[in-house]
Length: 39
Image 1 (cartoon, one colour):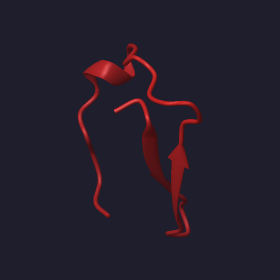
Image 2 (tube, helix red, strand yellow):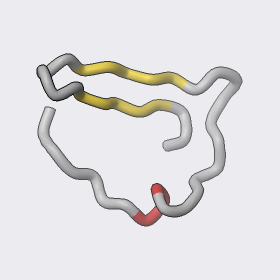
Image 3 (cartoon, rainbow, N blue to C red):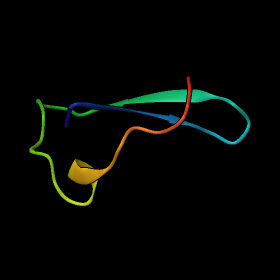
Image 4 (spheres, one colour):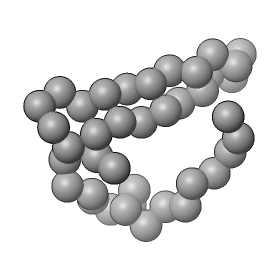
């Protein structure tokens, strides 16, 4: 949503990244990507 992202390292550690000062507009190629993976 331009405000947060979740990533998982190869060893299974999940990290949440938060954008400072509000959301950014969606940009390509991320705007067209599907959600993949499992949590």
